[in-house]
Length: 93
Image (cartoon, rainbow, N blue to C red; front, top):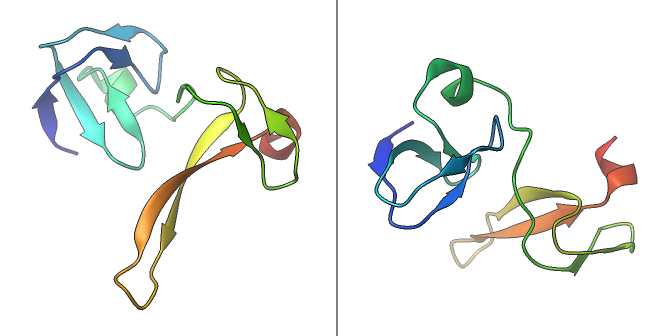
């Protein structure tokens, strides 16, 4: 994973701590930001903030700040694309 200098503040995917603007962080489009310390950069994804309300695949409406985000890739004929999907609490467990 590449180490970047952040252009805006964010949340660490492993510990949930605050990553400030201008701080170095590990970044991946699928996983998100993490502190460069080994416990965060190698740790599992536990905190990926959902900032928008959306519907889960099961039809349940998920409020902003709840649920878990998942990156969905589509390798279609036009080159495909990526989008974020949100899973409700019952679909995550």
